[in-house]
Length: 230
Image (cartoon, rainbow, N blue to C red; front, side, top):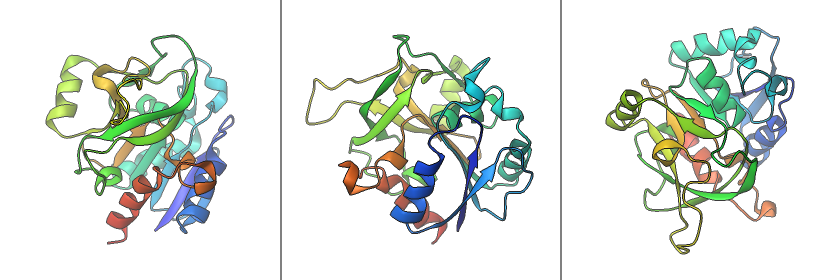
């Protein structure tokens, strides 16, 4: 399994992903430049967090026109795996690879904190081996993370088991914030209809190393690897 991390002007979480995969998970990973048309034989493409192209117009609105995105779209349409984290999630919605949109947080403030999310299903690659009763502590860092979609789309997401994560309270602490940004249905991550494209606002790559005092993100990457390498 070879992973590729796309780097846009303004990406600032690309090295975090590379380190999490190469050092933390012992996987082969390369960086893919936004102007390239070559995915370098990668099986799994990741779009990292940051502020691609300065988040001008809308978050992810310019990055979706990058030359590399033509290849990413074709890869996804062939059934290849793609995952966007934070700004990467925003780019995937702008590119039409994921349903819905990410709007400014309800409080109009940038949120940077550890939050809790719960997997909604075991039917998706990143959640296949997760405990549906567990609240995973995963960092967030975004200003435009409020998931929005029309009623029909939300119903389809629920009916087709496409909701990947929802924001949750910490089971042990009833005072923990439940919905941090106003996302509809508390959605923190979704998949496409074919279930090979995934997006989430929280940053699992920042919760892989014990030195960061949080390793809950490892379970998400382990779930991906267990399925793909099976």
